[in-house]
View 1 (cartoon, rainbow, N blue to C red):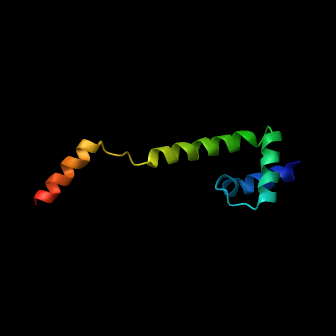
View 2 (cartoon, rainbow, N blue to C red):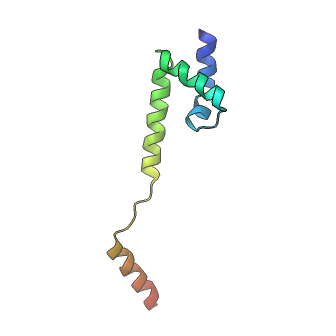
View 3 (cartoon, one colour):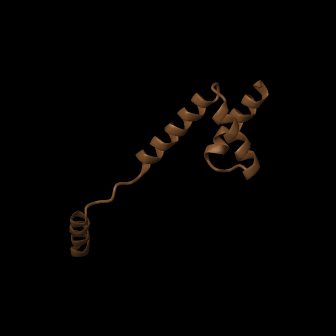
Length: 76
């Protein structure tokens, strides 16, 4: 029903962030699995958050570069 969709979408970000109580999380997950209307919204937001998290990961420098930087800093 429309009320179920409105409720599911209103709790979508809390669902994706893992901030819902277990019973509510299961209810929303069940709705998203069944609902063709809500699935695209959920899937878009999930993919967006996954890509955002991946883009925010700081790359680790190669060990050689880190050693060279430490050596320069220690020399000063």
